[in-house]
Image 1 (cartoon, rainbow, N blue to C red):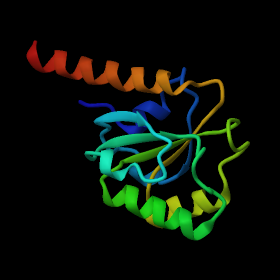
Image 2: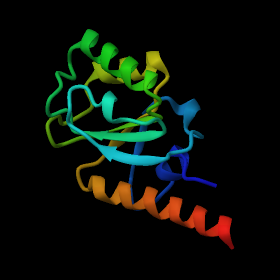
Image 3: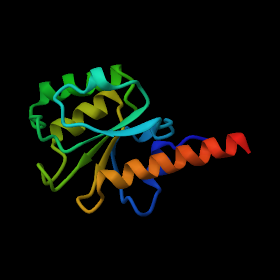
Length: 135
């Protein structure tokens, strides 16, 4: 079985916290991708956990966050991981509210958890799933 958002949340080393979309954590994750583009949608295939610090976003602008989250969900992104303590000390309410409205799972990524650790966890789970399929 491919990794899910729930399996990543329960991964003890990652220390992820669910801030929105609790009812959609069973979504399979095809890949984890970090992007600081204001519009990463052209580079998404669907099934990704998108990891951001919101370096290029005004994550406190409610309407901008509604548009951003709506586009991500429309592109098939299954979850959004937001690193706190980098550009924002906490996930801005505008982003949390937009994710809740759209039903997009929003995961808080603590500063001590590098995006690479999340990508490795997803990659390892995908590899294990593929290994099980051929054995």
